[in-house]
Image (cartoon, rainbow, N blue to C red; front, side, top):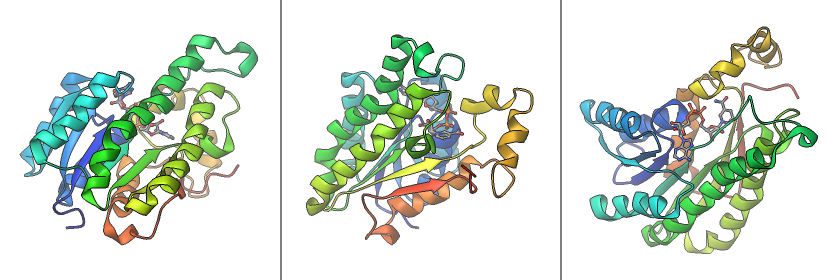
Length: 251
Ligand SMILES: NC(=O)c1ccc[n+]([C@@H]2O[C@H](COP(=O)([O-])OP(=O)(O)OC[C@H]3O[C@@H](n4cnc5c(N)ncnc54)[C@H](O)[C@@H]3O)[C@@H](O)[C@H]2O)c1
């Protein structure tokens, strides 16, 4: 098992990619703290892992609230005495509210930054001392193809996800000497509840498929495959890097 004896925190773990990553981490031997603002959802997702023989503890927490983030990390320390992997996945995509800048309300911009960028900072802030203590800590921040390609109609999302690139590299640069690795995973279109409404608009799904080299959208489990590799010792010389997982999106 590739993550035996490891303790991982996965945020946004109630559904979608976060749930798939938590499932896969547990399957690979990690003990997983699953955090999400959806208390019932994360409870059910963790119970599912336990039913399959894995070790998973749910925490109801909003990553924009410092005390709640501190409680996520404290759960890892209290339950398992360590933390090796932080998977910063929780995020929002406000497809009906995000907009080109001239039409973008300040409140929508702020909300994007609060969740997609500052939430990640808060998780890193509280987790890094434990990750360093582990001697081989790993941070994986979930960006998007919008991190580097931008998003023509969702400027707030692109700004927040773009910020993660420089932020992650800064962490990797500063803490590498202490054995901490930090990388960014940038998914393209992945079939999850986040993009369900957006992709169900007439023609959108087909247009996305036609602009993808593999002519399909991705699955959460495919992102989990990359996540488990980057979290494991197989990726021991990989840090400060950005990984697109987008089926070959034609930009
Ligand atoms: N699905 C895609 O096509 C796609 C593409 C690029 C990037 N991403 C990114 O991948 C990550 C996972 O997305 P997904 O597709 O699984 O989305 P999803 O909406 O299915 O799941 C996101 C989860 O994060 C949780 N969450 C949101 N805000 C939170 C907060 N403040 N505190 C705690 N939990 C919170 C939600 O409750 C939900 O369970 C996100 O960061 C997203 O931006 C997704």
